[in-house]
Image (cartoon, rainbow, N blue to C red; front, side, top):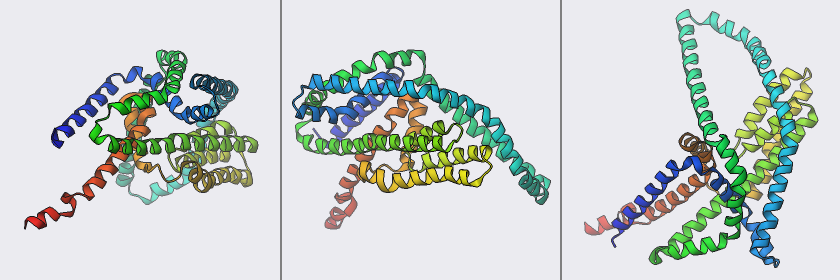
Length: 357
């Protein structure tokens, strides 16, 4: 079989897989979550097997502990977060009013310095862009809501996800060994090499970055609560959980946290303490957590991650957000592999053309 025909078959397979993924996106959420749990916990199951436990017993112990800890954490946090969400919603109008009063003198000065025609153009442009941004955010959140928080998906998460996670975690090694037998023998070693690269990228990001986000969420939430910031736990957890996009968690956290602190506290020392929490957290992430837990093997640029998350959410809702980063990792590894092949080929070096001349 020629290389062109092989390429056509692979491309057709990828397109069919992508089409099925898009069509079945509304029912894939519990399977994606179950697969993510199995993938995340597979190293723990391997270690328990090394200590003499059977794979089935290891799977039962791990999943019971995982779901018990998750349930206990949710039961502990949900009542606290519920009250803080209500309190934050009540503060938003007052914060916006205070911000408007703060910026009013500067706007008046700007209005006095600019001619009326220019001021009208500025006002129209701001209104237009604000409307577009609000419309995009609303549609994006609506897609995520309809794809991830519908009653059917909530029930399927509760009922189906544990079952999927159990069978995948128990049979993980058997599944990977079976898939290996399906690889074309002539290209098996190359495919295995790229799969290992993909696994290292996904493992580094999913396992490593998840740990980083959880640590930062705990640091931010506990620190802001100790300082006494209203909705501090909510702000801290939110900033920590979105820290998988470098600098975004700290930027959002310091913006919202300092905004609330300016409204709540009258002394600058406490406000500075709120800002210092996020500076310390960002320093901890950059110089301690990420180098040790993630390392340099991920190779995913922040812009590529943001694009993948937005594209996944727009195409498949919450399920698309969940599979966005693994998909971006796969594409990134394959692109780097393709570029390495291209740069080592005669097409790049031009040697074939020189020899022909």
